[in-house]
Length: 135
Image 1 (spheres, rainbow, N blue to C red):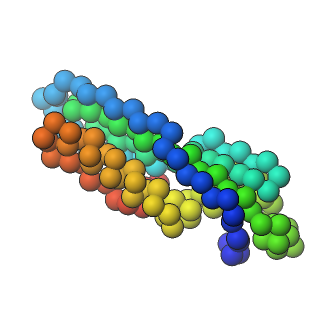
Image 2: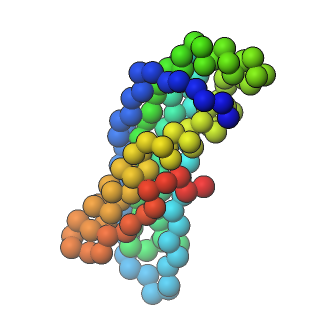
């Protein structure tokens, strides 16, 4: 992937969803998954949602979902470079770019911190997830 220059970068916490469940007698398995959703490309502007979900299977303890929205503008020169290399600035390109953005900005670390703080709110042990994209 070529180096591209982005301007007007913005990120915001969009949603936190936290649910508690009754304790299960079976040994639960923790599942943590990240995803990129709601990709929008409009000229030089683009945006996407980064979602981290943590849950146990079978349902026990809790599940939590954190969603951030990120938006930016690609500089015209960078777009021209991409097009000269035969690349298309579309949702497929943005999905790959989004994973790199998540790993090179504090988005995943913020999600990890919010999950740890939310899960330890009643004095329990915090659930600590890695501060990078989990595929």
